[in-house]
Amino acid sequence: MEVHVVAPDGKVWDGEAVSVIVRTTEGDIGILADHEPVMAAMVPCAAEVVTPDGHRVLIAVGGGFISVYRNQISLLSDSATMADTISLESAERELAGMKPRMEAGELGRQETRRYHQLEAQVKAGERYRQLHGAGE
Image (cartoon, rainbow, N blue to C red):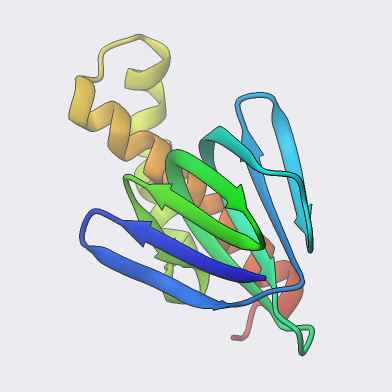
């Protein structure tokens, strides 16, 4: 399968995959070869792509859409960050600082968007750490 992860500022990741897992508004969806065509809304999550050599690529996506058609998978997101570039501690700290205002409904539209981006980054960073250890 061919996978494309795209954000407004360009391609984030391209490559071959044997599976893709993302979270949609209906729950997690796993895609394998020859999956039926589907289009779904994604929620902020840690997208996981398994390449043919078994490598797991983790990408923090801030919502958007997944499209699957004839072994072509596109993840179109308003933000996408490779997990290996995320500072988990910084993302957790910023998220914790915003949480009280989010819970009180005091965040504006851009701040709410940033909050959800940080949630996705924390999820991706935690999963990356599980797979690769804290030292990497």
